[in-house]
Length: 173
Image 1 (cartoon, rainbow, N blue to C red):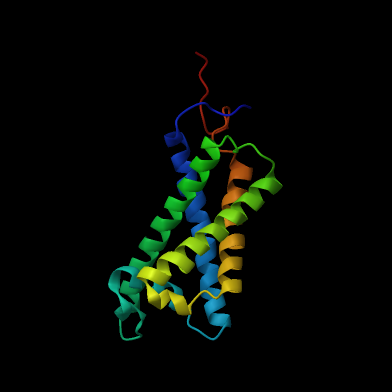
Image 2: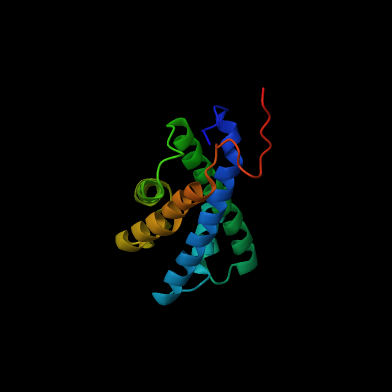
């Protein structure tokens, strides 16, 4: 099988899928970590919803269903966007076919970069309520292992951009 010379747009569906799968895994990890550390299972979804709803969403008085729906929409949209970016970037760099261990390391590095960018830079400037969450060791580990490595694993298993995948029809010119 060889890499398809098509457009980056061909990789978008796989990027969305990879991002949503990785997003689901990291959200479960966030919720479990919050609970184990004495917080609430609701905390991560409330925190994400506060990006749109403001600090009021962090209060137990604010209806959890509203916070959960809005938090989930935001979380999975961003996860899908990051998944697309990861897969398309690998495609552009012609790295979709590298060995699985390198994809896992690349994914972990991507997750770490996302954590630094989102939590240490953007959140510090625009969303100070995020500063009290995601300590270095926990945030870095969750983003590298649960989000980034899941993206790498998806690419290693599915091999987006390959001609001859079972779910594609290959037509000779």
